[in-house]
Structures are given as structure tokens and as C-alpha cells.
Image (tube, rainbow, N blue to C red; front, side, top):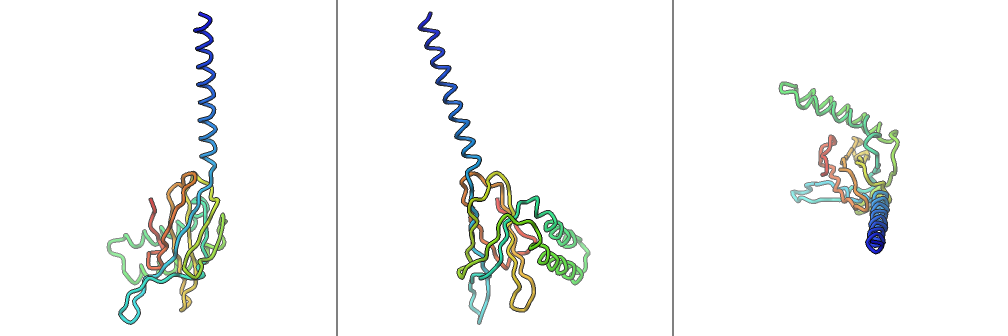
Length: 180
């Protein structure tokens, strides 16, 4: 009987240690940082030749989704007007252009977690990003003619240790896709 009790308590201690180690590993896994990397490009046709070129010196902002709510409101304003079946195309263009200009002015005022600029090859990186939540990655720049360029991607919830690679395209609508 003593041997049985000793054996059972040994297994109990071993099980408790394994449970504790599993919880500690899960805790470490939850706080392990993630990273967000990517390239910003523009698809152009020059002299009837199509080319994908990097967007250099694009200011890129990493925002927590909660901090990007005012930006999303501007996106939704444009989306709502585009969904109206009998809306005047000129009016849609004008309203979305106003919202785009407002977004261009708004983004630098939002509380960014980090900012960077794209390099000569259009690349950017954010390392040591907290896992467990979604983010907005927004790039802004004035084009050669002075009109605003706003590129946005909304990420899915980042997992611990994940390295998310994004392709930001100047040709994409500023109202932005969702990366799953």
C-alpha cells in the first residue's frame, strides 16, 4: 500500500511539474515578439512596358487597430458612397478624394507604435512587435504631382514568433484589403 501511495504521489508530482512546464512554455510563447516586414511597389506602364517598381521613401506607420479607428472611419465613408447604386461617379470620386486627403493628414497624428521609411528597394521592417493582436500598416507619401499616396494593409492577429510579410501596392485602393 505504501508503495502504491508513493508511486501515486510520484506521478502526481511529475504531472504537476509537466503541467507547470507547459504553462510556462505557453506564457513564453504568448509574449514572444513577432515581426512585420514587406515591400511597397507600384505597377507602372512606361513606353508600353509594364514594370513593378519599388516605392522609395514611403513613410510607413505601424498602428494598433484601436488607434486606427479614425482612419477606418474615413475608409468607411468612401466605401459607403461607392456602394450606393445610383450615386453619381463624379460625386463618388470627389468624396473619396476628400477622404483620401483627410487620411493623408490624419495618419501622422495617430499614435503609431513604430514608424520607418522604405529603402531604395521599397522594403520596410518592424521587429519586436507584440503578438496577439491585429495591426494596421499604413504608408503615406506625396506623389510627384503632389497628390497623396496612402497604402494600407490590415493584418490578422499576429501569433508569437510570426514573421508577417506584406506587399503594399500603390495601385491598390487606399480603402485597403484585409490580409488573412
